[in-house]
Length: 101
Image (cartoon, rainbow, N blue to C red):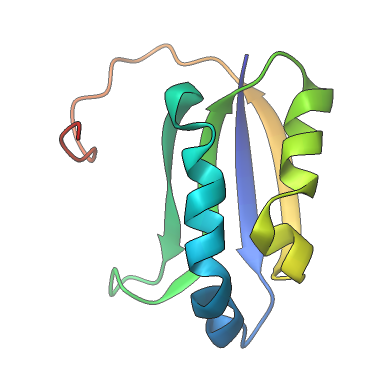
C-alpha cells in the first residue's frame, strides 16, 4: 500500500535541512523502486523549502513508520509535524513529474 508522508519543518530550520539533505536523499534512494513520488514542499517561489511530501509503497503502516523513524531528517529533529496516511491512486498522472532517469 502507498503511504503519503506530509512532513513540515520546524521554523527557521533551513540550515539544518540543507546540512542533512545529502543523507536524506541517500536514504530515499534505498526505496526508489517503491517510490510513487517525492519532493520538497516549497513557498510559492518554488525554491524556499519548508517540508517534504513523499509517497512510498510499504507492506504495512508499521513498516512505513519504521522507515520514517530512521529517516535522516526525522532523526535530526527537522520536522515540526508529521502525518502518515494510506493512499490509493485512482488517477493517471499527466503533469508535474520529471522524466524517468
